[in-house]
Length: 218
Image (tube, rainbow, N blue to C red):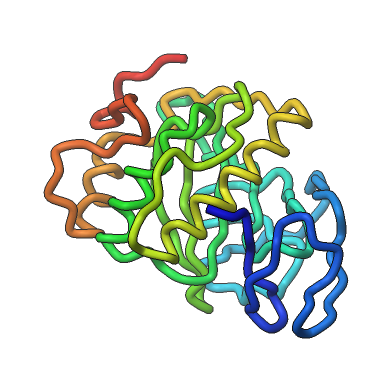
């Protein structure tokens, strides 16, 4: 499986090491950047257009920094803090995509992404333009060079492939995030119902996250 991404201008498939798009000529930046958000005005992405920058909130999550691997990726990563969970500050990552995942795509994504650094899908959110956010627990660890197995859904494969490359770059920059009772169990239950999931638990890899928010105390 070759490592490719969608050109954000013309949506053509381009290799990850390409310096420009062969179809439309768009030039890509070679590396990603992380920008702390300190004095940005408060915004709620549930009501604010995604073109407004810098973003400050995704629902109840306070965004403390944004990170984009390069202009060659549609997805952006936000380091987010929940207000509090039982008076404990909570941390994680919000990964932006430009289309929602169907329940089938979500299951495929979970199945083909046993990434050691993405421990759990914790929540989901959508802004008013339909941009979709997966809230995930991120833990620093070893790099993963490729996806372990292919999947029939191209969109799920593309999302997982982009996340592998994103997380690898996060690891190289030393992003070690620890989550503390990040999301309550009832929120995970709502997440399951939203995607009509019948499985008793959500997981990536071998880590079970049913009631994770109530039981984890890392």
